[in-house]
Structure formats: C-alpha cells, structure tokens
Amino acid sequence: ARCQVDRQGWQEGFLRLFRYIAENRDICLCALDSLGREYLKGIFGADIKSIVRSAVRQMALENGFPEDAEREELTTRFLTIAAGGVLEGWLRGELTQTPEELTRQVDEIVQDYIRGVALRLKEPDTTRR
Image (tube, rainbow, N blue to C red; front, top):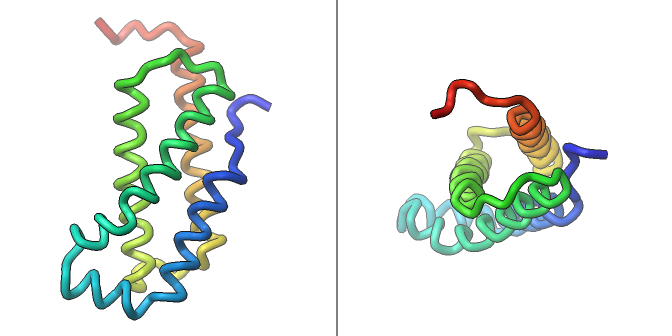
C-alpha cells in the first residue's frame, strides 16, 4: 500500500542502536556527561544518519515522490536530529518507553509525515510562489 515504508530495515537498525546503547548504557552515559553531546553524536551520528537516509529514500521511492535532493537532505537532517534527541532522552531516562515502543512511535510519526507529503503532492499548492 502507498504511504508505507519498508520499515524492517530502518526499524531493525534503530532497535540495534537502542540495544547497543542499553548494553553499554553506563559507558554511553558517562561519555555523554563527561565528553559531551558532540562526542556521542560523533560516535552514533553516522549510524543514525545512515538509518534515516535509508528510510527517507525508501519512502520517496515507494510513494513515487519526485526526486528532490535538497528536500531529501533537509528531511534526513531533520529526522536525524530528532532521532538523536530521542536516543539521548532515552539514555538519560527522560523517555521511559522500551526501545520497541519508541521505534513504533517514531514509525508512526514518520508515517504521518509521509501521508502529509503525499497529500501535499496531490493537491495544487496555491500558497507557493
């Protein structure tokens, strides 16, 4: 069906990252607190971006979105920052959901975004100039 992403790939990547952090929570938290967010971002940022980029490309292809490299890059950056914030919040205990629950909730947000893009592309936009 349209407006669906092959979620197995990116969800599995996200879950693997959560599980790695869970198994190494004390070390990751220590690195975050002592070395800072930028250090941890350097470690996990490439993985997160790769997972997100894969999901963005997949959803664009599956939904027949026109090729737009600039939009794809902005969407990837936006969702990478959001996913990094979710991981950091979870690591700090600010988010108490399980990795599976968080992955499902992030998936719902991504699906809502896809539906919004699909609707926007279907309707002529008279507000753009």
